[in-house]
Length: 96
Image (cartoon, rainbow, N blue to C red; front, side, top):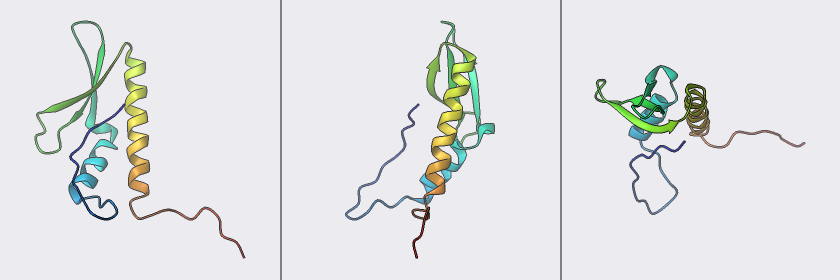
């Protein structure tokens, strides 16, 4: 599942804005998601808009509820990892 967000141009390494960080935190919280059934029988995943709590942004469609929930879970995992690395790379091994 892919989410699109606003991008900015820069002349050096990419700088993640506070606005983007807040969106990632919002998307990484399962309570901000829901699954709706469409008239054609498919299930649509949606996340609650950050500013307007009455608005839901559609993300993807799946044939089953199980598939839709799996898509949400993988998106949450993806953005949780992005948040984890905002402070830079983590050390996995050091040598003496």
